[in-house]
Length: 259
View 1 (cartoon, one colour):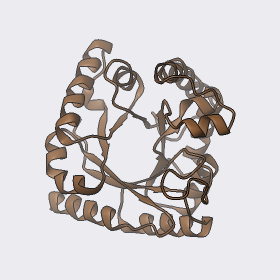
View 2 (cartoon, one colour):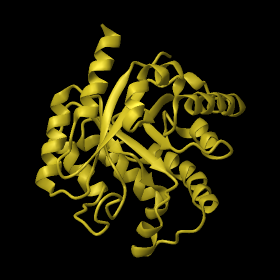
View 3 (cartoon, helix red, strand yellow):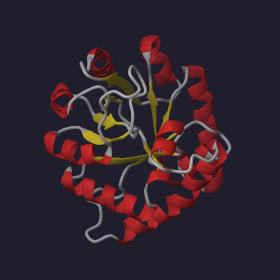
View 4 (cartoon, one colour):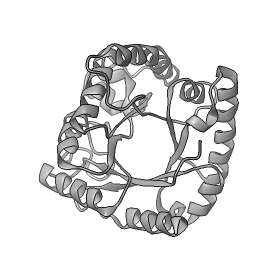
């Protein structure tokens, strides 16, 4: 399986009104981008930590209606905040609301304030990974039972994180997309580790699209990331202004490679 080059953006719902967020979604949807993500936090991570902020999953329902072209999802939903059966049901429903454009993005979570202020047990990095490991088969089982089933078969599942002993093993078992954040040489190494995990669990590594979220000067290393095995490139844009120049650079690079 050869994956096409895809590009997208994470529109973080911080420091912005819904009207501003919605307008950014519409601009992305009209840009020619392939994917559009939000994030799963309860407070801003940049600027005023108590600034404007809106929820993830309710926003995804609105995103499904506002957009028509891009695949949509969360980069990434923390596994510890929602019952896994409910999470699968919400994902299936969003796949229908978006007419088959939803990506279920999952991770183990990391931001302590989100957990503690909303009454969740923060635990440890190891315990949060254990939760992800425990919940993935529950999610897969529920997705297989739902009526109606997801429009997409299988529903795309993105798992974010770079841990080589547990996270990449879980990716090999369940994901259709892996997302990492690192320099090209590190991504190349982790892609190799993921391939090794695929061999161990009996999975074709070509079934898993490799994606990376890049920041700042990393935008000048797109060819290096591609050579490292990445085909899905993502930038991020915070509110309230939602600068899309990073996405525009990705689009130009994608289209030049295709031409």
